[in-house]
Length: 329
Image 1 (tube, helix red, strand yellow):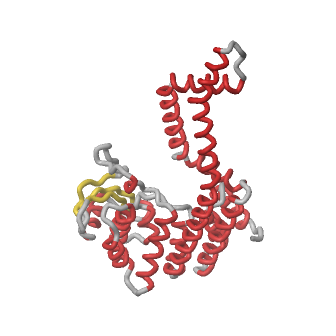
Image 2 (image 1 turned 90 degrees about the horizontal axis):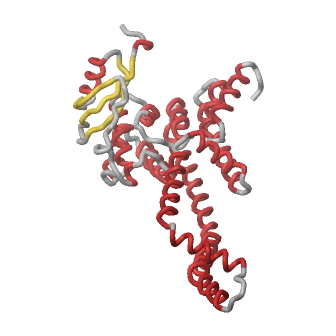
Image 3 (image 1 turned 60 degrees about the horizontal axis):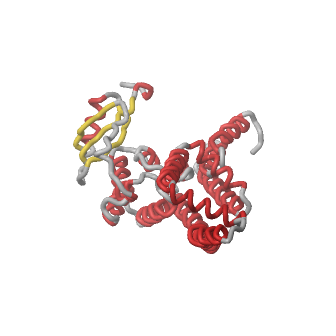
C-alpha cells in the first residue's frame, strides 16, 4: 500500500454530472487511481496532469461575475444560506446542491457552489473544497471553517462568519456614506476650477493683454494649464491609463496589499474599526479551536492568521515558537 508521502496532487478537467466543465485537484497514489476516483464520483475526465491546467484567453470568462475574488457581501450570503440549510438537518453535499439550484446561473456564487459540490463529491472537507476551488476568500474564511469542522460546530462557525461579514459590510456602507458629502464638495471644487481654467482665465488673459497690462499670476497659471491640457489630452489620457494599470498590478501583489492594509490600520477612526473587527475574528476563531481541543501552540497562531491583522502570518510563526518554548499566552 502506498504511504501518504507517496501520494501526489493531480489537476484535472472533467465534465460534471450536472453539466458543464470544471477544473480542480485531488490527491491520489497515481494517475489511474485519480481517474478512478473521478469516475466513481460521476465525473467524466477530459484531462489530468501533475501541473495546474491553464486556460487560454479565448476560454476565460469576461465580466464582473467571472471574478474569483469574493467580497464580504458574497461571503455573508454564502455562509448565511449554508448555515440555514445545514441547521435544518440537510447533509452538506445536498445543502450545497440546493443552494446552487437557487442561485442565478453563471453568477459568482453559482460557479463557486458548483466547485464546492464537486470537491465534496470527491471526498474533500468543506474547507478543503474551498481551498481547491480556485476562488480567493478573506483571510479568516478558511481557518474558521476548518475550526468549525474540527470541533463539530460548522453551523456555528458559518453563523459567526455571516455575522462578521454583515458587520464589516455595515461599516463599509457607513464609511462610504460619510465620504459622499466630502467627495461631492471636492468634485464641485474641481469642476469650478476647470470652468475657470478653460473658459474664464483665457478670456481674462486676452483682456489684460489687449489693455497692455500684466496678467495676474493666478490667471496666467490657469490659462497656461488649460492650454497644455487641451493640446496634450491624448498623452494625459494614456498617462492616466498607465497609472490605472500600474495600480491594478500593484494590488495584485500580496506584499503591496499588506502594506496598504497596514497603513489603513494606522489611520484614525478607520484603524480602530478594523482593529475591532480583527480582534472579534481572533477571539471567535480561538474559541472554536479551543472547543475542539486543538493544542494552544497551533490554535493561537492559526486564530491570529484568521484575524486579518497586518503581517499576521509572520507574527503568528513567532507566537507559535514562543508558546512552544513555554511562554505564557
